[in-house]
Image (spheres, rainbow, N blue to C red):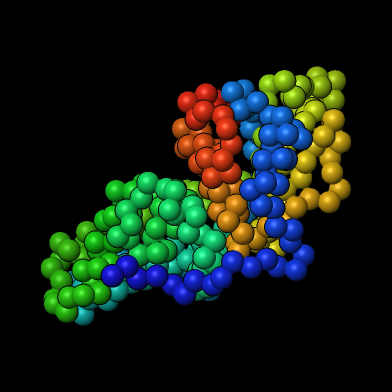
Length: 286
């Protein structure tokens, strides 16, 4: 049985507009006419808020190392427990950074999970972490195995097992932290025909484009259209309770790896039923 947090129904906060699939197709395909054969993506500044907890994953990891150093049965058990706490705290930190309530995850998150090629035997949180590509799938599977062994067997752990758990915990934290630290707070999508560079003013010019901006403080994604070089004043705002939120967050989280970024964009376009054949989608980063 896969353990999962309590899922809350899909809702929308009062100040959010909820774009549906038809809206997205109209915005991207009809209004902007972005050519995804020649996609250009520009990432925005990085401005994340860090760990939201008083005790951080690295604190639990440090405790685990101190416990392991005792070289006693009690120390080994405590080290194993703190290694698990470090992993759990890191998972919740990653979700919180992405504007996702880790205690009450919206059912809207299921859309991304169902369309992602991941191990469905993972706990729900690990499925979501894997779908958002916070860590390699092999590493996440090892975390699952470790957590299951710790939760289901009351036995004295060997020193080697405790050491493996400690090293796995540290590797997982480093992997996820690298993603959290690089999480950009926005990006613009346009194409080569709608992009130019003003060498006099040293700035990029967009004729038609769409801008996704993540508000770390309020946990919202604002979506702004750029038409004929004019930025719309009233953006769409979506939160964790909207299906599209998770696909956009997946793009944000993969901004610094062109292979993963392309995969994220393909997944997003597949979700909104965009007609372009996936093999023709190309990305240039600026």
